[in-house]
Length: 343
Image (cartoon, rainbow, N blue to C red; front, top):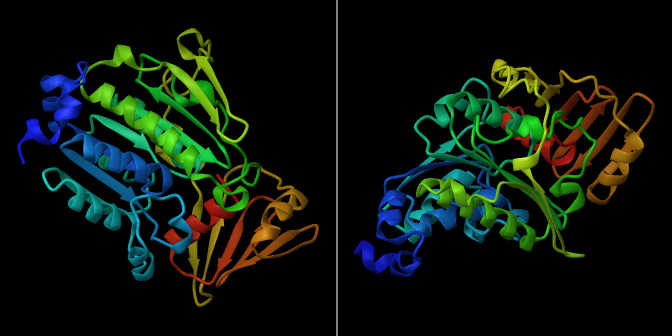
């Protein structure tokens, strides 16, 4: 299929034109997380003709994903396909002219720089702040533009980071939320429309970066709420963040050294994984139990909370350490922790 025919309506959009389309076809985008946000990002950029895409995800497709993760079909859930593989296959059916690499892995401080190597832009499709802070460190260090996004319930947030030109994520959100302190999609639910809005904003920003028009970026931290419908923007051009930001001012990159990293270990002979936290969090079991109770069986005392869901038995301690029984796969355990405990 000729480029002029396939992308004709996009080429007709004057800010892109033939020159911009040519740049898209030569570009490389890396999407970290292929769930709800990542699925919309990947399909949008594939249809726009981004020539090279790397899709990274540790998880597999489940039936509950189908309500909001547009890349996936019932057959993917039945086969329990890794999300990165299922997404890459769909893109192959949508646009066979572009190159897509699927990477099934847990993103961590050991592999993040390799995963984003040679990227022209990185998009955040993750579900936890630990990975986002890691992304921020890696992208600022390598001077790679990246686009933060998050959505839960009916609201979402997004901002674009041009390293050393705009505030980074640590400038705006200085401290990572404590485990169990906020809602997740699995405890508070999420609406598909907010996913589409936030991911579309991220994809639009990515296209502006890839065609070389950074002056068109929105330059804001945007919050959208679709149920009561509110849109708020904080202009980052006037944002006075900390002058001693550990990332963009001091270049410490502590998350690239493994700081804040969940320490996960498979417990021999127990079909269980222990996930430890380096934070000093003291969980509010009553609040966490209220969030988890609609999803499964919950009980707690002064020392620990026990949560049973599907085939898993999750025990959480006051310091946010958790033992997840029912799997010895560390990646599955990390995914369950992010889903139900958060961060």
